[in-house]
Image 1 (cartoon, helix red, strand yellow):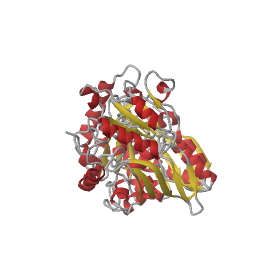
Image 2: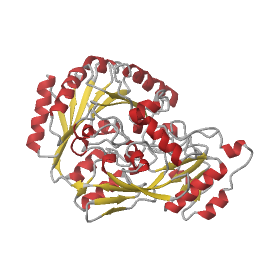
Image 3: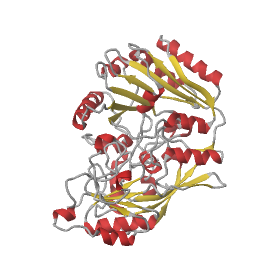
Image 4: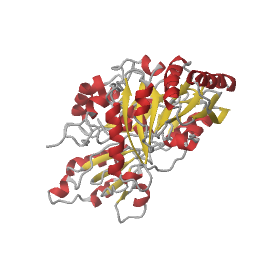
Length: 476
């Protein structure tokens, strides 16, 4: 079995989300329907309900398995004042609230079926300043961030799914192909503007404050709604070489064993992850992104093949620039049908043990991303993203065929995750959020959990932002 570039890219996604899913709003349970017309009159943007034109265009979440979510109302926010009024309305009416950037929450927490969605996609500006900082609206897609920065000769480390919203990515950490050199997206946060439920005002914060620190990996949907980000950027690398190496069936164990030693010995200018593809005899796919030229990239590929004792088929090999590389990794911008979960590897895994997890699992792949180099230069408590000083993250990813229902997909993914958790003891990545993650709070936030809960309680004491895997106190 070989791994096409499209298939490999389907195994990558990024997300973040907010809100709790239920069968009815608190207001409805009390026999009181919210006065949606009153909210509509308060907003600068539109408020769409199921009978309105345009509702169905913006309603569906990214994950097709959760297409059964029909929020009673979706506000097309155009500014921070719209966000403030939505939060105020949710608090007044005691209804479920979710802010949505790109809508990529893996389990559609950002598209609750029982509440108000503040859709931020129209808040999508990018301004690159003379000092190299970039001011970015929360609804901006990654692909648009990359294009705007490249036009000014700048770059920001981010994810590999171009349709992901910048807010969800950055608030959960933000792993991607530049992170071994430049760190996570959240590591570049210089400031933000946030509307908090406590007093419904726009706060300007930086990572030196408690709220600003919480935004550096504390997860989407917690603390408040971010209406503007300011990021430090770096000069766009002029030469970037990208490729994918597909290894044959039966090589998964040997290639993974070689890969985990190979990547940790590679220069920081190089990133790679690995997908161990399930089946009777697991195969492997290894993408690579080098801030450098073609010759060095070919040497790196040859080194991996020597270590693995296996020959791969190289596809997509090209020397390009920063924007060309970001476009290459962005893949299809369309919605996907999938189920996923994650575990963090505190240290390198036994190759046979890891590949055994997907032996016979024809629909599941394990995607392992390194969290070394620049990511682990930062201490676990310096930002809200606690997974520092560990080896990497394993995403258990199932690409669901149309005949696979949601519950079946959940069962298959969580069976693999449960077995993975026996030796992957470093937690889990909040941007790969999973609604069956039993230990979600400690898994996502580790040593920072207590501090993050305190920040959530301070800025959202009434639990306006509360959801199943949220940090705000649950309303009683």
